[in-house]
Image 1 (tube, helix red, strand yellow):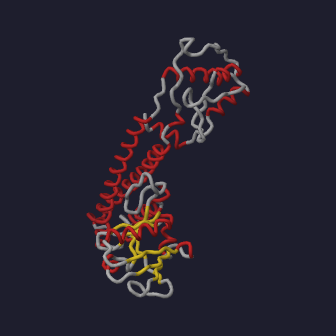
Image 2 (cartoon, rainbow, N blue to C red):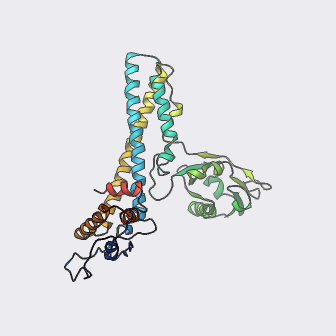
Amino acid sequence: MQIIQRSSSTGIATDTTGSATALDGAGLKHAGVNKDPATPQEAGAPAPLRRGLSNWDQPLQSDISGAQQAIDFLEQSAAQLRTLKTDLSAKLAARQLRDGQVEQQVRQFSETWRARREATGGKLDARLNFSKSEPASQRFSVRGMNLANLRNGARETLAVSVGGGAQGLRSVHLSPGLTDGEIVGRFDQALAPAGVRVSMGQDGELTFATDEANWPAVRDSIAVQGSGIRFPTGQLNRLKAEAEPPALAPENWGTGDIETMRETLQQVMQALSRVEAALAKVRQELNDAQLRAETSMPEIEVAGVEDIADKFATIAKVPGYQSLQALTSALVGINRDRVVSLLMLR
């Protein structure tokens, strides 16, 4: 049996990701199903499909899948925090000391929080900010890199190293009269090839950001060399990079006594509020992505789809090699993420 794939203008095509395979008349005939040689227009059959499922916006699928992963993580976190809040409140009301239950719940949530990046596919950062197009980033500051220090002084060229080695060495030229925006722009332009972006912080410090996966390497490898004006000359001087504090810090929650439990309850309530706020934002992102999907989905003529489905079902009922080949060809490239993304549009 020969199964011929239709192009996107005439049927459901299989692209490099393999979304579906169309059966044309030749394939059906070889499978034992007779087909009139007349064209669909001549036979009064429904018009061919205008576009195929393989043409669906792949970045849009990624947006929906990423948002769903983040929602699953945030819903799980919120449920654990609500349970912990209830149990802590009950124990404080009864003035009960440790019995192991709340300690276990704190450990459970700590494990959930540590798995955040993997559980959300790198879409939710430590500040509970959702990133639909880029991987979650780690924001940080570098000691000594503040605008008050950088804008003052004579002309100087700084050699900034990120990642170590000569390939990670970047030059930043500073001179009197530069505006704060120009200083930030020069650092950003110099460090962007190293995977580090720079913006203006609220406290006069430069705010740096890099992918969370790159943070461990960046954190321990930032160094600068000047000419003695803003930074010392000679060898590169290692600078301390300090990560922006995470939104939640369950490793600091304690349950050793009544006062500690009361403080933990306050932190749990604050954490729950932040998680619920982040959950609402990501749900809105998912809704927006679904609306975009509904407007960008290919227009598929129902009659044409039903015709293909009926003929495919006829082939599948016939035992033998032809049936197996038809089934396996149609299912090439279908995976869980694709099916879940499509089901969410119902």
